[in-house]
Every structure is written in C-alpha cells, then in structure tokens.
Image (cartoon, rainbow, N blue to C red; front, side, top):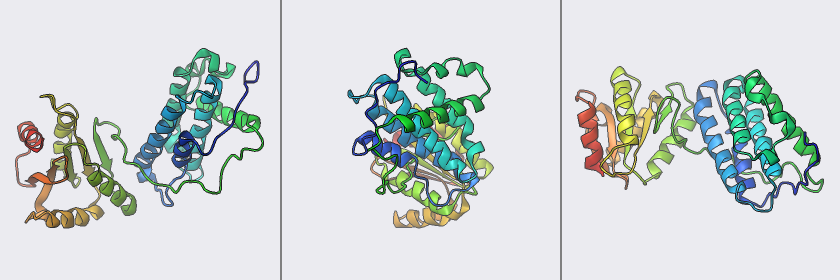
Length: 289
C-alpha cells in the first residue's frame, strides 16, 4: 500500500471527527430502494463533516487522514450493501473516493491510488477503497477497537439538495413515511433562510419546483439563498395540512406552494388554481425576506 508503512495513531473515538464518521455509517432501521438518494445524501453529509474536522487535526499525517476518510467511506458503502442496496450507491461512493484522492497531497497517497480514474468505474475505485479499509484495519493500534458499543444512534440529516437541483430536497412519492416525516420536521426547524414547500407530484408541482429552484438558490438583490422541499409523497400531505391549519391557513387541502419566512411563519401560499410563474415565485421570495 505504502512503500514505507506510515505511523498511524489510530481512531480516537472521543474526537469530533470520529463521532461524525460513526454517525455516517449508522443507517435508519428501514431503508427501501426509493429512500436511498435522500438517506445516502444524509449519511454523506455526516461523512463530509467528519472529513472537514479531520483535516484540521494536526496530530495526524496526510497518509492517515487519507486512510481514515476511505476507511469510513467504505463503511458507508458496506452499510447499504448489507441491505442489498450497494448497486444503488456504488457510483456515488466511488466518486467520493476519487475526490479523496484529489484532495490528498501526493505524500499521503498510497501507490495504488494512481491511475484509478483510467480504470473501470466504479469497480476499481470501490476495490481500492476496500483495500484501504482492510489495510488500515490491520495497521491501527490493537488497543483501539474498530467499533464501539456506544455507537451513535442513527439520525438523518437533511441533505443540501437532491440530484438535478440546486437547493431542493425531493421526498419521493414512494418514500418511507417515517423518513419523510423526519425530513419534513428538520426542514421546518432550519429557521435560517426563506423556504419553499411544494406539495404533491402533479405537473404543476413539477413546474413550480423547476422555476423556484434557481430563484431560491441565487435570488439576487444581496439576499441570502433559500431552501426548497418538494414533498411528493401523498402520505405526508395530511401532516402538511395539519401544520397549515395550525398556522391559521383556511384551505390547507388546496395548497400547492408554501413560502415561509426565515423565522418559520407563513408568508405566501399558492393554491393549486393559482398561476405560479417566475414572477410570482420571485415576488413571493422577496416578500418573505
């Protein structure tokens, strides 16, 4: 792996980066194929957080940082693979593995890392990530266990966005309702930016999301970006309607687009019969600021 074996300090389980990495590999109890994009994004967000903290840990060499990032990245992949979902996450995990290579100084890279971009993707990259995992497992100090009995409880983290969008998280129509409710509650609790909720999977909902996503991502006028949640799943609609009733909105069943101020209060609600175009959504965004 390395011409001269590096000196590894091992996994310090009380460190913040270790806690973030451990959280990244703890999946919820129920994950179906349709849930994978959101759950994977949530877990990788924690892995990214762990990587960021790890990079400023001055006690670790570049080689050990490299091994640790790939070590836990493989564990994220393995967690999905054990559920029979490995093929659905393989390419994403492999892309992250290549990113780790690019972000590591040459002095920290093992010899096997060179040329992976020219090999078979994602198979060769995944083989490398697993090889790093196995190598590091064999090299870390024996008194440091690979896992702990006090592993963090799996807590989903709302992804930054969904594939194909800039600032919109999509909750698919077939998504597990408990996962959807978790994401919905987290979205309501963010309270840091103007937010948009789009309800249902109709053509009008699709059009509204496609128009709103770039507006909320880069609104202009020196305003900070917003966030969008597209709740396609019909099982979540009753929860959204109850919440609208609690906010005093009189026709919750007719709501298609809901704009919230940063403090969580209602600003604008577009009904299914309203014209929802670029002008209307831009105006709603700035009215909520």
